[in-house]
Image (cartoon, rainbow, N blue to C red; front, side, top):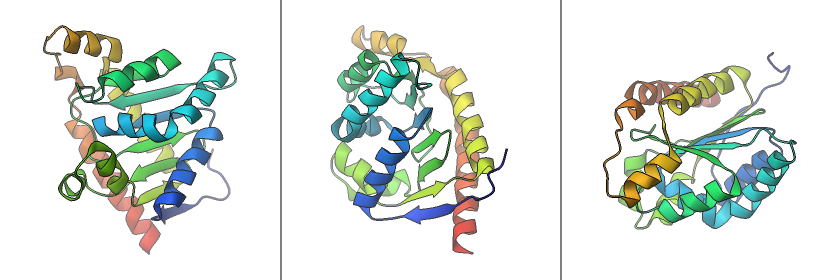
Length: 202
């Protein structure tokens, strides 16, 4: 059911963005996140202790848990293992949407800096993610949350279990990524972000 009051806004101060991410995590009853491979390292560096608190609540039956969708490769293999050990559910998707987004039961947060710009301006995975997080869009609108959640669930359904992906990497096998091809959902996400940005700037 649509809330009586909804808000869609852009946040650009890096400290404010990190605060928003922490706040939405701590107040969530469910957390679903899609991010590029470098996002796993960023989450581990800045947010791992906070995510562990949520996962402890999940183990006590007080939270619905954390699900991550990302590309798993040799650069984030070890931190992926740490999140799995902590209780995070993770799936590998080869062709990810070109921005990171997180969905809770209350709101959606999505980056709005194109990935290729991040690659040009930054020199390390953490710097790339920090650049991407220089501007985010936050909305409590039910329609936006519902749309992004449907995209997330489709990616999740077609994703490859992280444990299987890790085994393939460690054993030098190629993972069959055919089912993880998300090109159509990439287009949907881009269109939705464009619409959300227009609604804010009107």
